[in-house]
Amino acid sequence: MTGHARIWHLVAILGIFSLPLIIMYVFQVVESVAAPAPGSLIPGELDLENWRFLWGSIDSGRPSIWRVTLNTFLFASITSFLVCALSLTAGYALSRLNLPARPLFLGGLIILHAFPTVTLIIAIFIILQMMGLYDTLLGIILVKAALELPFGIWIMKGFYDTVPWEIEMAGVQDGASRLRVWWELVLPQIKPGLSALLIISFLAAWSEFVLPLVLAPGSGAQVLATYMNAVINDDTNQDFGLFKAVGMFYSLPVILIYLLFQKQLMNIYGGGTKG
Image (tube, rainbow, N blue to C red):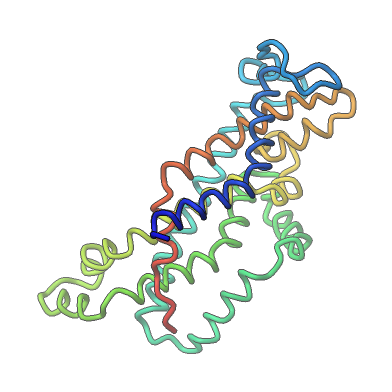
């Protein structure tokens, strides 16, 4: 059996196992625009009533979907920017500088990353209240960025480890400052890892549900995840067609990002793990 034949056999097997999931997604798309009659699986006529949230509020007590989408975009964008900016500098220090207790610090990063977020909710809730950041978008941005930092620092440290030290030494010997050497010689070498971390941090914040639900329950800081939760938990007017349409709207940016940046996401495995 040739290599191409083996690949196609593997694709066929994976396709069979993925078929139920694909069918469910197809039904979600179809039923969001053409809901079948009760007790039937056959779609009815085209009906965009489920997508009415795009051009108006669902009810008077719920914010506009565009305002919620803007909140979600700001939450994900600023969180990913903070994670990348801080991981760049901290990862460089851990990779290049002989810091005291460096192995213990690296071990602590792994423990923090593996620590369940939900166990910290009460402490985070108290701290945000004391700082006056409870029920604000800024509060959940800072919390999410702090929780994503251990992963980001460890990943960037691994990418810095793959950059030969001789490159920096040559730049310093030619008279360049340490900052210029980092900017012009080192940073281009780790751009694939930085791009992957930026995308992963953005997606992690975009899909976050627990932190906005608990730490920002008001409508002013509502994001799409909590918006969907409010739609499905509306006891006075449960509309599953509307819920499916909002779910499709919520997932479209994630699907597009995965389709457009597959190669960049795979680069997250390119960094070294030297201690």
